[in-house]
Image (tube, rainbow, N blue to C red; front, side, top):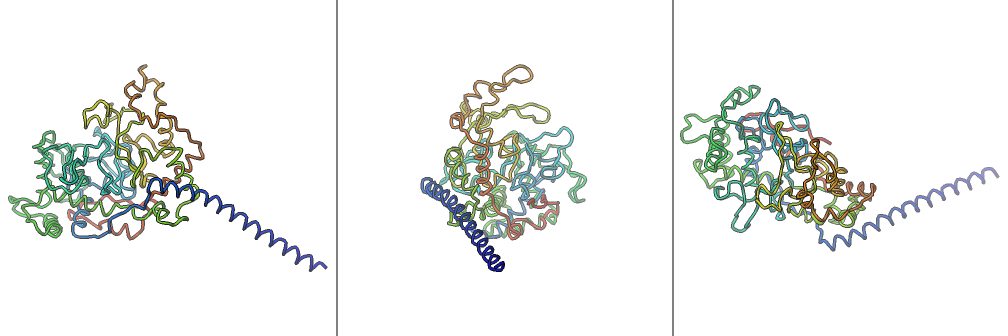
Length: 472
């Protein structure tokens, strides 16, 4: 009798467990299916598709661009490379509120700028998918911009002095950090740091000898960079790195001669490397759009519904890169401290001269956004929760006062704030969490092969390359 009761009890318990498991599973699936049905309508309405990216190929031009991207030899003081402010470990940003260029010590969040040296005015932007056709402008203020894709006419700080033959906006962009004193150029009279290898330390910065404030001076600076890389017709004896760069250039551009190499070939090679290296080929959201309904979490699914619905995020963060590449004001404090001096950053206005463009900055693309803090053009915000909060309440400074008794926001700044944001978007804490989970699904998932493909073991100059351990 006791044995029969025991068997019945076991059977009863197993039945309950199976029933509960079936109930929980089906309840989860119903919730999941409900989100999927809503998202399927969003996909159809917005014509959402997985992001198309170029096939990866480490060709000769890529290898040249890779060397140039990581080699500090391009900087006047030989101490910073493109990769210094675009670290792989920080998803091609640098973890600093404002970029720290030449003269800085260390990398990423630990990088310091000793003495009275100036910081760069803006936060370092990421480089993901910048070859996509939706990209029309680069930099926070759009000072590099595609005007006519067919004729390859660009807006840039060099205006009509911009060299011809540049492939795209990425190539145009690659030129201008080289010309900025606070980024890569340095100052006339500077000496390269004494901690560098002997053949590079304590050398005069000959590149910064020319006047970077005039177009003619800028072109001479660019020519000086070419001469440092490969030597000139007056070079009596080539350095080892110059011989190596000559080989790389001739392999990448077999139809040109050494004397024809210019900043155009340098910029085009860097852009080619960036196009192939920094394409998001492995994101959960793209996998979901390709048909894998289990690629993202339930929370991320709910977040996508907030993003395209109640949150109204997709009005500006539209398209395959989640940016309209237009310019908007978010009510941020325009004051930025640069080397102890308070500067009012007027954004797009500095490019166009149009008073309607004051305080406006380009909509940042959102792929890998969870990895690229701090945020905004001034790096003033550390978390995505704070970013969302700024969008929800862009006028929170309107009734605040400065120490001198003046209002924190002028009337013209209040009036400049995007009307999309001043229409009072209201999200609960739970909805904000869902939204952030969705943004995380836009992250590229790195692999060892990817790292092996994009990181060089060394550069021709022999200078230390700016690479730190990839953060998990």
